[in-house]
Length: 113
Length: 220
Image 1: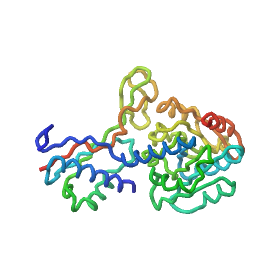
Image 2: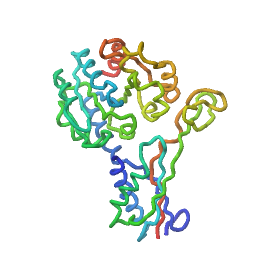
Image 3: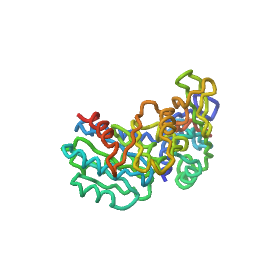
Image 4: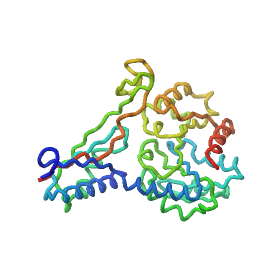
């Protein structure tokens, strides 16, 4: 549901950057989405196909780079990816850590002709 | 042709949802100018958000409290709050699974903010989506009811990482259900060591005092 305003945001950003570059056609849109965000690729794709016709992004391919959640251990600073019920630092055994990746949500780049 | 990167590739690195964040910042300024503390309450449907708000309003008669109720549909929760005499505005999101900052902005004229000290925002019942949408609140609070289980931080880490306080509700049920509070607290603090975990029953009043203390410490 909330992918609708997100997709509108993507189209605005893409049109803005394509225009600045003097590009006539956008071929690819590269998105970075952390797994802690609640945004779903298929849903963005669905709205994109609905909203992009008539914009510079029409016909472009969406590429989703999903970023896994990453913790930095507060005891020993080791960085690791939690897996399911395993939140234990592989170096020192402490539980959890500061979230240093997984909350990303941005347009990384576009490819144009 | 782009000036940087490979030919044809234009670096963008522009965050999404900034429009919401801008409105949230405006809301935050608006509340700050009126010295109103805003508490965003997030939880699953049925965790006891409205019941806790009713008990809180009743326990703090000297405090000037307003409520923004968010639901997909209906006025049920707003009607319950209105019976206490507290000013309340109901937002129906019409299907959306969370509140966002523009919805809060549109609701503000319906509240007598100049006369209020504190506004509770009861977000749409959902442990996932509300976390991604800043409203302009002062504090985020997550409620988790005992029947939902102590493993929820594993499944919904985003909310437990984002909040200033976690409240375990329906604490009167703990003799009957296998909810491991130590395990739950350990997981919450694994993500978010600064968030206290309180247990209470809005029905019996047990533990309510700790929550009221937490609130009073955040009011002028």
